[in-house]
Image (cartoon, rainbow, N blue to C red):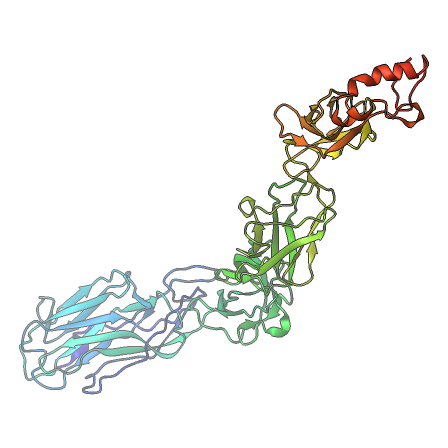
Length: 563
């Protein structure tokens, strides 16, 4: 039988090429059955280009051209094979990364076998959809001549690249043919080997990401130049530059930031000193082609990465103490930094504080100790720590130590607290009766830590201990700048062991030291009040004796005028 009279003429291979863009996908090499071989399969070595024959035209010069597969001829090797039985089929599947062109009808024809329910010598047609992983199937109808070799021809197959990632190279399988036969001639055969040509420079890809690193350490990224399918273009030399794209630390990219590609790769090494010194989370780098434009794009961004602080290097007081009332909480915070001034948050560090300048000479106290471990890089003495000084004096200074050299706070004052109590400053001294106590008695208004306040308070003195009785004069005064002075304080009764009480409304009072009031001596050295003075009995006689002994207008040295 002469088949050339019954088969339609086959389409010739088209090799039109246009520039396009490529994804990343490896195409499996040709695989032949180890058990049986194809009867008569025309498997031409066609050529595709990842730019010209791509499914989607993107980028300058990109095309949408299919490659036409030459007629596939299938012949049985033993009789009968296709001509007997039912439910047999021939299936053709485009390998991953390829696509049937939906604009071309695929046909099958045989002189002895019908297809898809048709009669002998009929043409069966399937219209591809162009979907990924599509299978075109022709169902066989039993033939009538078991003595003649069955020959089937399939025409009109057009394919194009859907995703040619990594597909460049010779002998890349594009179609897979499966037959279901009575004799099992062959099955699951990979047919039609294609030589996939690399395309033009299409875009950049990070081969090595910058990755999380320590501040100041070398970043070692690598960027490759690829075609639409992600195939490395080893013969392309382009200048590739790096810059910070996402910059949470407002940092600068240091070192050599631009390199020429070599064999399609731009690779940064230690000698380039590419680094970021500011610790932050979520940096990205952008690689840019600064030469002739690529098809899809000239930039690519890295994956996010972090820059971490280095080892603890030095301290800084990040919350300075301020003027504080005696006994109140002193608030201070000390932060730990690396050599590049990044806060060291990952590793706790012990920090201690002490009084570096202590004009009051009083200890620095804390409920939770003077040494604390950092939390997220900061050692903090807050209100709950009750860090305090109780002596009110100006110009204290604290020191912090633990890493590197000690650091010192600003000067600050401890001021008096709330006025709550009275306190004798100048105690009463022994004096003569009816004479002013000299030096004058003084009483101060203080906080609970005995720090003098500047509060004006009306203060009253009274004889608290007076074994001989008597009357106290000059016992009222108002404090000025926290101090009350009693310049006219005196007693009219000679007596040993007197004591004073200081009081004021709303304040805790105070008691003085004991003092003596002595009798005034008569002229000639005699005691004016006689032996009874020691018991307090003769004190009332003093004015009369003095009047009799002194001339009118005469003044004692103690200030009393009896004339």
